Length: 487
Ligand SMILES: [Zn+2]
Image 1 (cartoon, rainbow, N blue to C red):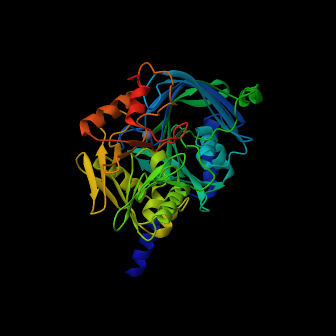
Image 2: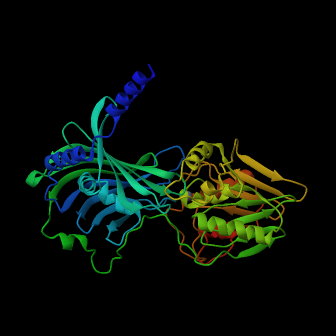
Image 3: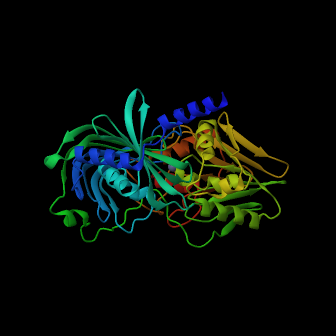
């Protein structure tokens, strides 16, 4: 009886098991032939596209904002490997204002080691097949959404900071076309973040090359790139010229969004008794209470910066735990240090609208790049407060957190306010220009919204700290802000 059961189990396992490497070779060979990838060393394609700005959505629960990437042209040399894409964006800045036509580019060279960028070559249908052929892939059949796929898997030869090989998975449909490719890359908010690209509406190019008319790449669950490909051709004769940025343009091509980072550790500045500005490209504010420290903007930029902010807060206000970390808003340049904040045992405080997103993202596994949070074994503690106000108060201090209303930049963006000290701290609503700058026309939306909110809340403010350091660096006043609008 027992023996029969074991045999049955063994059979069941065999049916669903990966087919041998030899079969994977056959499948990859057939698909490569069907897609015209045999003899393909480089590819050139063009179309209309959009780029999504990961982590900069106006609401934590909605897709990334997309910006047009017109005149999209890309060339890939699989042999180096190298890639160059160019486009033109016509978009208003995230803080509002006048739209501007700006060129964009993404350059990947053999020196580009970060998987977040290098994957852009291997996640393409053609790159996937080339990498699969070279990296001991396995294959098995799988039904997804009622459709049968040959699922090809392999480990990329590139290792993550945590020493794991990056995984790649490709879904081959019944027409022998690569329909979907997945990989995972480390991200400070999402942990092991799924990157998924879908390729549909395949068309025939010259020389048997097949290309998808439609490309959708998602990171963190929402599109970061979409394209309608109008044409493609194999092995362009002017490959080197296409890959070379024009003289005077910077090569490289890291992702946008990672703010300037100061090499040195933070210094701080006492604004009032028990109130310290922790200086940096992104400032934070440390506030002393009788039994604890509160940080406004505890984890901007990255883990390194957050650790430095935490250390500086403990240095200037010794022998007290940091109990609360109030984030200005959920955008990733203001939150990418949150894993360090969680590791410190700090409760993250933010309006309810941000809570579920942050809780889910920060709870995801981070095997590719273990961070201070995953090493500490601590789980995120997030207070999502309801209503428009959260007040921290004891016998020594009052610190008010107010939700800003009417600002397009981000739902659930807050300011911090010390009523006794008359100090206010804000992020991203506006970027105050140097004194005596020309009055912008149209005026900056965020500046007007900020003043409207001060009036609505009836706040008496002497000094205003911007999370983003101003140029020149300074604290400002309501009068300065009014002056910037010519009032
Ligand atoms: Zn922002």
